[in-house]
Length: 419
Image (cartoon, rainbow, N blue to C red; front, side):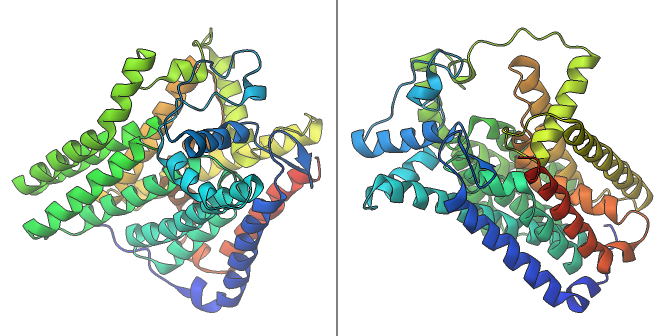
């Protein structure tokens, strides 16, 4: 077991400043619900999401027809954004909840705003889970608070968690699954009843995740593998039963939807009907460099309306250098402090499968959007915190942590002035 990264002076000494920053971050997210324009238009230096009308149309279809739509056009087909009919292939859970919300709203505009509010609530819950999970992993309140603060001011997370999109629900479920897996790893003694209940909950969450986004499939496989591995590591066959329960419950919940996909689209995941035919991509160093640049660009600032300029490119380059440096420091700290406990291994596993899936997606369809990495939000923030505190424990637990948080705000705000 790794020694705790202790010292909680960040919370006690700078409590008021932290509370103020959290209040600002939450207020900003609530403001985005009302300020973000609908569709790909620009207002208040903010650009709306071009996909949002298609997501909302899915909800309205369910509300009006009480049945699932069948997608006949991909996003690449002519007029797809005008029709807004290219998200129907997505698993239905988020949209079913949205249809219930809109059905009790007095107008379509009110339904849109309340669906955005639901996404925002999921985003805030994910922030809480991020802080709690990082606190558990590091056994440090300071790290937990700093992790939640980072998540609060990640613009890509705030942006997509203020729109009608199934991303926010998938990130929440991924974070909740991560939290439960960490608990399973950290508590060696489980009664049979408690282990069965936890496995059933985990299986239910896996099924719900698969009914939110098909990209959550790696989490389903990882959850089964983690619980089975715990059984082998602890030489306790009850964990193997738990892994079987997770597989059964998740599969039973998700099977009807994915069988429908196969029946309608001749594909279990239906990605071709969603993304269109695979792109013709020449995989080379220049392709990888572009992937790295575009991923960083949209991870830092998810909107597309800012024209490329020298200042813009410098800001993105600063982001690439900053992320690379922090990651390098995190690797050094991981090796130096021997952060190889089961909790850390689970986080590194989640990060690895998320990155692998992201590269595979871009090797086939070319979708370099940083938000696709956010199912691994907790491991990503953990890497950032380890990188920042790599030189000494005191770095994270004194005012430097607040300075880094403020720097994150200022850095991301610089992009708005280019809009």
